[in-house]
Image 1 (cartoon, rainbow, N blue to C red):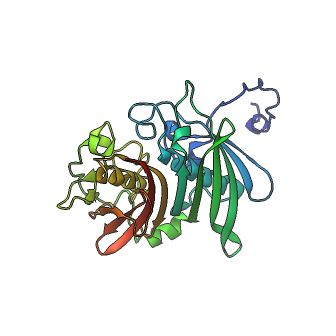
Image 2 (image 1 turned 180 degrees about the vertical axis):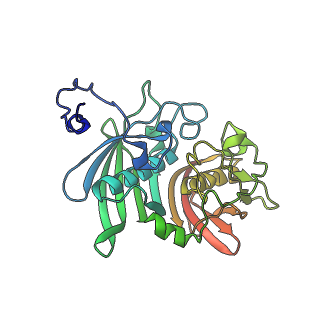
Image 3 (image 1 turned 90 degrees about the horizontal axis):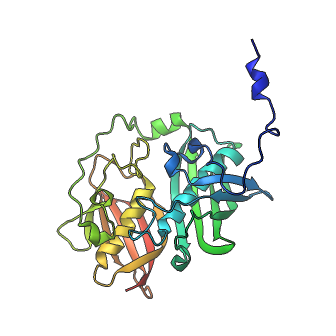
Length: 313
């Protein structure tokens, strides 16, 4: 019988030369996705210490990240792509084990929406990333902050800055007090706002439900949603909270239809699935133009807050 280790060690030099462009995504586990369709990264290279180039592909059709009229990419696709880039870097460049849990602490993105138009083929953005700070627990990295410039066809289209930390599965279980995706019973999702009010074509993608106040909504969480809950979770994911922010701005500006183009969010604590959460939007104090503030509350606590820059209206 042949030794299987011999085949595992066989170099790949003899394989056919790959065509220019995309050949495959990175391993979906490296970006914490269960679905290949939700895995947007295709590769990575490193340069000077803390400098990386990450390659991605954006699909021409997507349930959330492409505009309803299929003309443009949504700015929050930048956030998801940059988030995936962070997990990829952590696992491959900073030796974070795959079983560790990641926690987003801060997200900041700004997009030039006029440059996010769809082409006749999937877009292939390039992220130029600089890790600006690394936190340590003892000798091991425990978190980092990084900045990214996103380019399409060599032209800048967006910037991103993120801060995240990570912890072992055992430490996470202790932190969560035994709360897991299997033990938490999510509240039933209430009826959502009309999809047109939040610029979504499908009722399933609406994450806000009406309340007694025009600028306040209940967070609508459907754990069967194929994008937000690509895999089971024990809390509301940060990307759903960013989408709630986007929808709150849309709902509050239905008359003049302001478009969010920048987000600066801080996540203060986990948003739980078995308790109601509330989203409130208001004009940012002292802001110029269309800046707004969106805040998430659960019980007596503020779970996240996000400053949003808008255009249009």
